[in-house]
Length: 263
Image 1 (cartoon, one colour):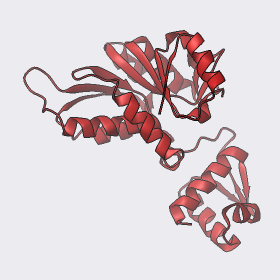
Image 2 (cartoon, rainbow, N blue to C red):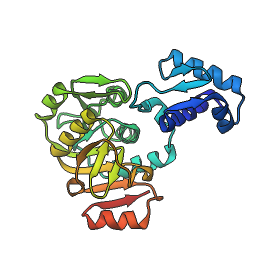
Image 3 (tube, rainbow, N blue to C red):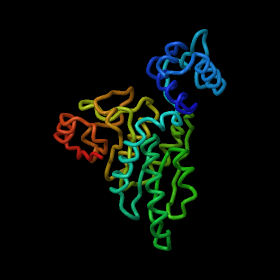
Image 4 (tube, helix red, strand yellow):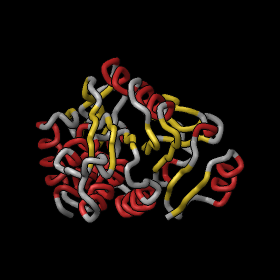
């Protein structure tokens, strides 16, 4: 197993359990204890975890898997979801994107599509993207066909999202045709949710400023709850997910007025 894959697996185990034991991690990854110790030492040097005698623990009580380590989880599903979601966006529209691995994939699909399409001209750009995600902005900033609007705010290092009053100040001044929201949970009673309340607040405002709201998420998030509520299902127009979604979940979402697209 390559180092990057081991690190991703270790971070996922840590996110799920809150702590790691060297021997248990070695058995789970089918590598030696010495390899796990080296990996934990290097991750500790990057301040990704706290090294302990015999293992490691997460930073603080509330641990969130950093975006660069989440990117490999359900990657094929997220790429298919992104392609289907991007197909819902028309030329010239104003699109909102919050942070996350799936919305990042949507941004990449849009960038590739614009590269093969027309250039922006005097009539306006081929597409306008409004985002609070630094990593998405960095990928789109070099695309002349895309007008990029990056909100201000305070950066959260785990997800590269900008949050706070400066973020909401910008979003209060714009109107979106469609917003693509990545989420941490979709619950039939509570709606869509995020782990962090400040990120949920930004996503809620993005939804309020948009004519259409599209949720993009792999099926592992369906039926799950997270700490902070974004909005109810009645605000969602379309949910794009993978084919592993259960028929019961699809039927319940449809009954709630949400159009479900599977990839």
